[in-house]
Length: 451
Ligand SMILES: C[S@@+](CC[C@H](N)C(=O)[O-])C[C@H]1O[C@@H](n2cnc3c(N)ncnc32)[C@H](O)[C@@H]1O
Image (cartoon, rainbow, N blue to C red; front, side):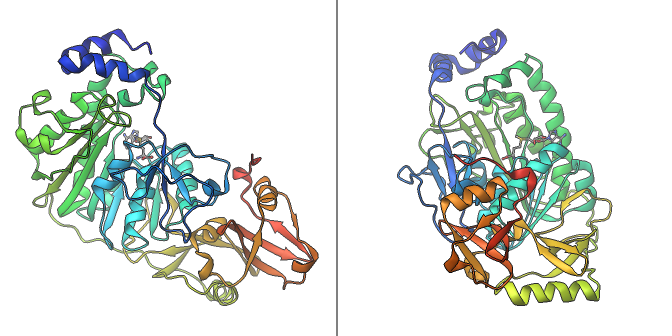
C-alpha cells in the first residue's frame, strides 16, 4: 500500500526497530469480526462461531452478510476486532447511566447496550444528522429498550447532563491512521498537520464530556489513530489539568502499553492500551480509561421528563398491549407528535435537545388506532409477544423487499390483526394479517433485495 511520505517519515522515527514490521502490516489481509447480540433470545444460526475473539465475550472473527436474516434481525453486529475492545474496556455494570458521545454508526453503543442488558440508561449521541439516522437504524435493529438517541453537539449535552453519568465513552473523531489499512480512502484527508488539528477538536470535545461525569465516574477515550498528539498527549493533558486517575486496562496477547515517551513521560500513561496491526489481529487503536476523582463543577439539580399521554392514547396503547404483548417493562410513556415511546426513569427534560428517539419507539397513533413499530418487533423476544407467524426464508425475502406475503391455506384462518413475524427463530418485524395475507410494514427506507 502506498502510504503518505510524511506518514512514513514520522513513523519511521517513532516506531524505530519495529518500523519495517509496522509498515509491512499495511499489506496484510483485513481482519473481519462481528458480535452476537445477547439482547436477542437465540444464538444466530447459519453463521460460523468457531473463531471466538479472545477478549470479547460476544465477538467472533468472520465476515457478516449485510443482507441476511442474522443481520436484518439484529442478531449480529459487524465490528472491526480492535474496535471491540473499547466496549470491553468500558464494560458498564447493570443499572449504570452511560453516555456514548460520538456514537454513529453505533458499534460502541450496541456493545454498551449488551452489557447494560436493558437496565440503567444509555444516551447515544451523534453530532452529524445523517450519521445519527444510521445510528437510529443500527440501534433499533439491535433492540435495546433503555436508550435515548440524540443528535447534539457536546456543549449542549454538557448543559443538559451536568455531573450525571457513571460512564462516558468518547470514541473521538480522529485522523484515522489506524483505518488506512482497511479503508485506503481515509488517507486522502491526511497531512502532517492533521493530527494536531484533530487533537484541538478532541480537547474541545473532552472539555464538555468530562463535565457530564459524576465524581467517581469513568471516562473511556479511544481513537483509531497512531498519532501521539491524539492519544497519549491528550490523556497527559487531562491528567495534568483535571482530577482524573488512570484505570489500568488488561492487555491481551498482542496488545501493548501506551507510550509515555510519546507524551510527557508520565508513567501512568502505560495503563492505557495500544493496538498495533503488526502485533495484533486488528486495526490500529488507542484506548484509555480514567476515573474522575472529584467533581469538576458545582452540582446542579436535574429535572426529569414526564409521561404525557392523553386518555385516548392510553386506551389505544393498553388495548394493543393487552392483545399483543405479554412482557414489556417501562417506567412511563411519552408521545412526540403522533409517535409513542417508552420513557426511562432517568431521562432528563428533553426540551432544547435534538431528539432522534426519546426511548424505544413503540408505534404510531393513527386515527383511533395504533400501529406498532418495526423497532418494537425487533426489541421484543418472541416469548414476550402473544401473536406470531413463522415465515420461511423465501417469505422473509419478500418481506424485506416490501411485498405482501400470501400464506398457505393452513395458516390462513388466523384472526385479523398484528403479528410478530419470526424467521429462523428471530423476530424480523410486524405484519398485519388480513384474509390470508400479511400486509407489509417493513420501513420503506430499509427495503432491500436479499441474496
Ligand atoms: C470514530 S467515529 C465514532 C464511531 C462510533 N463510536 C462507533 O463505534 O460506531 C467519531 C464520530 O464523532 C463524530 N464527530 C465529529 N465531530 C464531532 C464533534 N465536534 N463532537 C462530537 N462528535 C463529533 C463523527 O460524526 C463520528 O460519527
